[in-house]
Image (cartoon, rainbow, N blue to C red):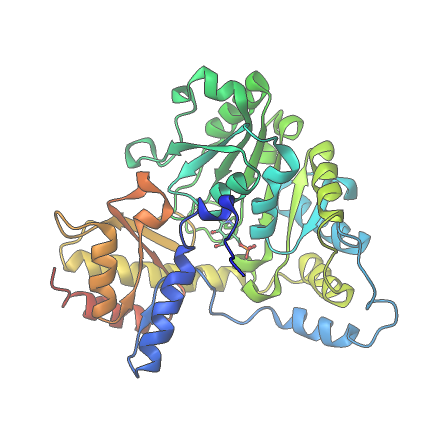
Length: 386
Ligand SMILES: Cc1ncc(COP(=O)(O)O)c(C=O)c1O
């Protein structure tokens, strides 16, 4: 039988992280030791309270059936308590919807909020599902370049009026993957004004909100008017080292949240309810040792920054997030050529080109291995010949 993927799938490049994971598996099978600074997959254990609570509820009656797509009331009340404590926001349960990880939420949002031919404003470099979700919905991604000289904030005034008129979603992501930038309040105020002027929804991806090295970043939802026009996406993945568990939420404007819920009711259900009980417990009672985790990532960040500066590379320490974003350290080499040379030396790091064409010229390193392994990576990188 002749088989072809859909045209919309064919419009997307291979998912970069998966490609590098495949290369790593091949090299490791050949017995090579690889330091993996590629995917941002936290290497710590999740909070003990989470595991204990899950085990305690495994055999409960009534937790094994379908969960509502938007999550249980208990889960959403715990999210509301967490958002109140962290940001001072008062949210009702109807203003919160569970996600099976935030990747799913981000990739599905254009299907819920746009029509074919609408525009979605996507930062570049940016998390790939902003673009792929847009393409799946037959909407058009419009690239907003993030430049170092603008603090890696998009220039909303540079978006042409005919594009802004068709825009239905503005994606923003701070602390930013991959640049590590944090957004000031004034930027979020601009987003609110933009959304009100052009009638689009702001989706603020705050997956890295707890991994900061300076002041705790604010949420987009704290800015006056934000809840008229937008939602924030939060994830347990990076904060609590729970990548494989797949739990996240959107919160904010109740009509947008209800639209997301309505969409999700057609394509998934909530996760296992014993698991939601465990997540609720962690959100309301014990968030683990976040200060210790931040300190650990800070030491890893400093090990990479200091080590590579000694090699003469131009590497700046990010304010937040799990990544270091720095210019390709070889004149004339593309980011993919440098990533391949680093892999030859036994280190995976991602080429900027995987985050969009506007991101060529940069490399991304994830701080998800121990400080010792980061020092080992720097030793290996010293030997890269290119
Ligand atoms: C900016 C950003 N948003 C969202 C996610 C998705 O996280 P998850 O699906 O594990 O919640 C990631 C993962 O790397 C990310 O970098």
